[in-house]
Length: 93
Image (tube, rainbow, N blue to C red; front, side, top):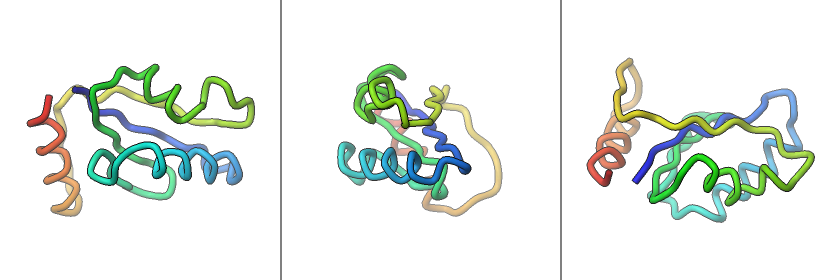
């Protein structure tokens, strides 16, 4: 089980919309958390390359995004549902 941050380019609106649509269509709602229009967190039995392939970033020349693997360590100040989602994702590892 892994957790990942998917970062969409703010200045590539069409690309971001396409990747966002794929992400929300490919992953079950419980397996992603929308942090903002340009940052999603994803969890699953995946590697970074699996996330890239599911989102068709490697095959779509117009898809601009970065996928970062999260290490299970987190801190900050944010909404309680974010911390709950991260704890649940971490517990599934």
